[in-house]
Structures are given as C-alpha cells and as structure tokens.
Image 1: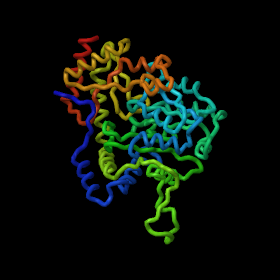
Image 2: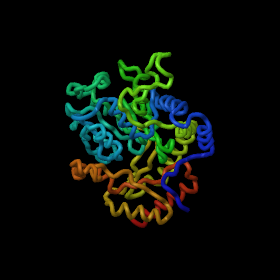
Image 3: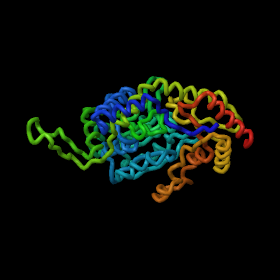
Image 4: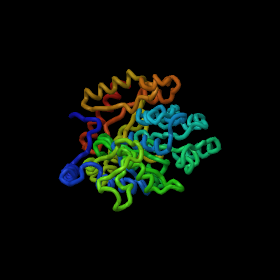
Length: 401
C-alpha cells in the first residue's frame, strides 16, 4: 500500500460543474465567482468576502487596501510559509519577524507586544495547521497600543489601531467553542483554496473582513474587484453616455481574479462542507486514539482548545534533531507512507537571511521545526489506509525511540 500526503478530493460532481462552466458563456470571472464569494462570506459569518486567484493575492490586497507601504512595519511570526511575509515586502513595508511562544506554533503574544512601534500598521497571526490563534489576546494587545498608532489612510483611521490581518490559509471553517469562526475574528482574513487545502478550487483563495465603521462593505468589495483586475471599471459612465464598449482604468491594479471554472469546483466543495469536515475530524480522532500517549511523541494539535479546521496533523519528537526527523520520514516512506514538514521557519530561508534575519534569534520556532513531522490527513483516506498509517508510525517509533 502507498499512502500519498494530500491528494485533492475531487469527484464527479466537481467535474460536472467544471464542464457546465466551460459550456456556459462565462469561463473567467462571472456569476459563479460571485456566488462563491457570497457563500464564503456566509460561512465565515461576515457580510462580504472576495474570491481571488490565491490566498497570497488576498493577503496582499488586504495590505494594499490598508495603505501599508514604505516606512511601515508589519509583525509576522517566524513559523509560517513565506506567503505570510513576502506580501509585506511586495507593498514596500518592513517585515518584523518575531518568535513563536515556547512549545507552540503560534506567534508569541509577549514577543508581539514588545515588537510594536509607532511604525507598526498590522500584525499577521497565522492559524498554523488550522488551529486558531488567540484572537481575543491579539486584539487586547493592539487595543492597548492605540496611543502610539499613527494611521495613514481612512481605513486605518476607522479601525483606529493596528490592523489584524490574519493568515487563515489553513483555517477556513475553523470554529471556536463560542461559535465564532475564522473570518470574523480578525479585521481581515485570507483563506487558501489551493489543491492541498480542506476546500479547493485547484488554485484560489478568498478574503473576508469584518465590518469597518464608516465604510460600506460593498464599496470595499468593489475596490478589491478593481484591484484584482487592472483597476478596470466598465460602469463608471452615466447611463446612455459614451459608447457601450467604453471603460476606464481607475488606478493601476493587478491581475488576481478567480475564474468561474475554478469557482465551479469551489461551489461543489462548499456543498460538501459538512461531509468534508466530518471526515477530517474522524481521521484526527482515529489518530488521537492510537497515537496520544506514545512515549517520546508529542501531538501538537489538540483540536478541542481554540478551534481547528483539522487541516494538518502534526507530531513532534521532543529532544530529537533534524537528522532524527529526516530518518523517521525516510523510514515511513519505505513503509509506504508519505509525510511532510510544516514549515521551515522564515529565518532559515535564503530570502529572509538576506534580509538580515538569523534563526538563532528564534529558538522557540527552531525547536518546534527541527523534530516536526506531519502525517497524511485528507478526506479520501479509507479506514484501511488510516490503520496502515498508524501501524507504520508505531513501527517506526518502536525502531527509533
């Protein structure tokens, strides 16, 4: 038996929806993309959301909407994928990387508070593995720094404090015990619908945002639509004036729009949301039943605490190093199980080393990374395959621990 890491769960319904989209008059951005945006907003418990071609595009659009740029600072945790921080560079601001909390994949709230300066315009919490950060604590911290906040545009002024622009790439439909979901906890939240995510459009993402006083959500959505398609607007002219084909470019925008072909996949995936989430929770429960308590193994995501989308199942081997971790993964692969690592901390990557970041300044993030392994967690796993993964894991632990 061979177990891959995370193949997409695409069935006949998704295939039929794509064929229908191709046969329609809309294959680029159209009614399906708009419907997906509306349904995603409903599922995040917010009035509006905007689909784009990636979570990265969503994240960068939030930065640009906030007017973040040269001279500004944005705080981001060391333990994340590059997309969380690269967009800060894209808009011309300075990424301020802080360590994780000890024994955690989440940003250190103490380090976050210490890193805030008058130049800080946003903080980027990362819901790694789909486990929600403590947004109440983060909001408390940024609220306590209101006196030093210097807004640069009207949206920043309306928010009145450092913005919380969450990287929720892993946390779509993650829900806390109080019923609040990812998307309504931060000011802006960027979600990924990449092929390996819980819900997929092959490539794509959606940006959700909470209501901002003094701003019509429809206007924000229109600005994002313009931003994602060159700034081009066909509806600027009064009715009956100028030729019907006329258009204007309101500002020099980008090309981040989602197509209706991709949205067609997403709409079916959202139809299956209950089924998908139930299966992921089931797999996590099976793993927990068999793997919690193994000597020398630490299970990272206890999903009952802050709420989780059950995107990743991460384990660690406390006290072990990278060579142990790599050998463990090799032996799992020899047994037929593909595993992964989530993630290399940013300061280990060449791009961030060139910016002056040094992993020695992030001991907690490195400690979490050096012995982390992510097990397969995807909805196509059968009970037989789950048993196979568990058996391979236990055997490898017996061999190496």
